[in-house]
Length: 281
Image (tube, rainbow, N blue to C red):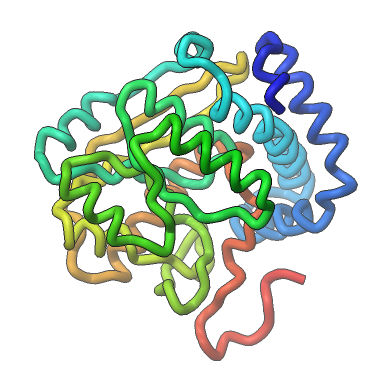
C-alpha cells in the first residue's frame, strides 16, 4: 500500500481495478451484501442496471486501499495537486459562530482520503471506531493521530463534546448500523434503518453547527470536496425527525454518485422489535 503512493495517478487507478479483480473471490459475501443493498435501495432499476452499478461499486472498493494509503502516507504537496474544494466558506462561517463544527459525512469509499484532504485546509478531530485487524488498527491510529488534531473514540462521546466546546471541527459519519441499543429507526432509501441520534444530541449539548461534507473521486483521479451550508433549525427536539433529516441528506448525496458508497455494510441488519425475517442471508 505504501509503495502505491509513488505511482502516477493513471497507474494508481489501473491497480485499483486490478486489486478489485484480485480480491473478488475473497469478498464474495460482501459482494452479496452490496447486491442486496442495491436491490433494497434501487428497486426502480432493472437487474441489469443494478449489476452494472454493483460492478462499478466493486471497482471503487479496489481504489479504497490505494486511497487509504494516500491518506496515511502521501505528502501534503502530492495531495494538494489532486483536490478541488467547493464551499469552504461554510466551514469558516460555522467556526465564526464559536461553538464548534460537526463536519458531517457519509461512508463513501473515499471517506478516509476525504478526511485527510479537508485537513489540508482545516485541522479536525476524527471519530474513530477501532478495527478488528490489530495491524491495520495500529497503522490507522498512528496516521490519523499524526495528520489530525486528535482522535475521538466512538465509545467516548464526551471527548467529542469537549472538542466542540473549544470551537474545534469534528469529522463525523453516523450512517452505519450500530445496533438497537444505540439507535432509533428512520427511513433510508425507503427502508427502515437503525440510525444513531447522536448528531442532534451533540448539537443540543454543544451548540455546534452541522456542515455537510462530501468527498468524491472524479474520472481523472482527482477529488472534489463539497461543503454545504450549516443545517438550519437543527435540532428540532424530535430525535426521529432529526435522524430522518440526516438520513435524507446522506441519501441525496449517495444518489449523485451511488457507485462510490460503501454498500458492503449491512445497513439494514437491525430492524424494529417484532419485524419478522431478515433482509440478509
